Image (cartoon, rainbow, N blue to C red; front, side, top):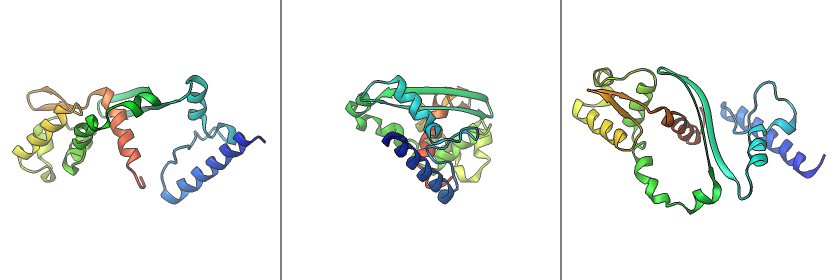
Length: 172
């Protein structure tokens, strides 16, 4: 076994241990059909075989939400991310930094689409507060207004939102 294979096996073992400790899915977890250490990093192996140095960051997903199935992926060259103005992303990220806004997004992803449905939950605050939060989410592209008091999460934002939530997890 060469050094790379040993390292992959070690990472897979650590990921399995982390998965047991946190009760979630470790970042290098694999489909049930993949059992050997070589395939434990099947996503990473696919990326590195297709992307030249300095590498890239990808995220993808296939999910079923109330609005229907969503399949989406995107990748960015590492140097592009590192050279970007990170501070310019602050408002978009800040729009998610509210428990009420995250609850709104969760409710919309689960099928609620109207202000009436959202305001039925007392944790959303007054109608004025709810509209304030909706406007912030629309302003940053996390929600779209689909007509008089109706909202939806744009398809291209569902997977990134779930990635952010998964990345913020301690346990899921």
